[in-house]
Structures are given as C-alpha cells and as structure tokens.
Length: 220
Image (tube, rainbow, N blue to C red; front, top):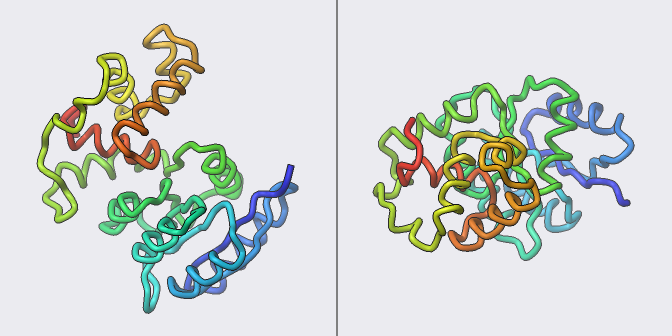
C-alpha cells in the first residue's frame, strides 16, 4: 500500500516545519510539497497530486478558502483539512462549504494530526471534537450570506430511514453509534450514508451535518 501523500500550506515556515517533522515520523505518510500562499498551493497540488492538503486560512494573496475551492474543483481533488488558531473562526464555516473535509486547531496533538490525515483518506470527515458542533450550530443559527433559507424540500429525495440516519449524523454520532441506535449493521449504515450523499449531492459527512442544521433536522 502506497504512502498517504500530503501537501502543507501555511504562510509561516515554522508551522510547516513542525507539521513536516510530525508527519515524517510516520511509516505511511509522506509530505510531498509545501506552499506559503493559496496560489502556490494550487500549483503544488496540481503538480504533486497529494491525497491530503493541510490548509491554513489566513495567508497573503489567495487565502485558504479560495484555495480550497480551487483545489476541490480539480479533476481528482485531494481532501482538504483547514488549519486554524481558533476553534470558532468566522472563516471555518466558509471553508467547510468550500469543500474542506473538516478542520484542526494548529496546536493539535501530534497523534491527532496523524490520525486526522489517515481518517480523511478513508473517506470520513475530521474536525476538532471540542468545537465541531458548536461551530456548525453557531454559523447555521447566525445570519450568513452563505446560508440558504430553512426548508425541508431538499430532503424530499430521502426515505424515512435515510432521514433518520441524516438526523443522527447531524447530531454527531459515529457510524457505530448510528448502527446501535437504529439496530442496523455498520455496513447498512454506510450504505445509507452513501445514498444520502448521492441523493443530496453532498461531498461528505461535514456537509451532511451542515444540511441537517439548515433544514431543521436538529437545532443549535
């Protein structure tokens, strides 16, 4: 099995060096490129074709949100994890909507950073556990230019069971917890989640959580 390829994007060389040192200690993760701004990040990503991009939000020139949108628009886009100093940052929600698979605090523990890279490659979303639901609840509840009108019409393609699964996803439950709560196998839960994402044209679990709040399946 080939190594997980990672590109580091941050305007502070010290931050990139720190992350590189952590990731280079692993047997299955390889840092294949670095960038100090969003424009360079797009070029490096296009050239090196990584599996994961660790993306700072605030950078000179092209910022991390715009860079995330452009990277996720590539023909075979990598997963993007937003890096931030604050766990309730105005830019984070925009980052998730731009296609990021979650976010991490810059002071995250080394083991959590490594685990996050592995998790997003497996197809799951990754977020800073202490802040995820507060973040989403905060921004879905607050006025936002990105916020769509609250409506259940987007959920019409879902079956009753799929709506139940989406509600539990939005509440932050894992596949195992959903399976236990609904007396299903984890495999069946994964199948339901795949159908939900396909029917609602969602990129990943993070977008499913956001939609659950927006449509009123769960309340902040």
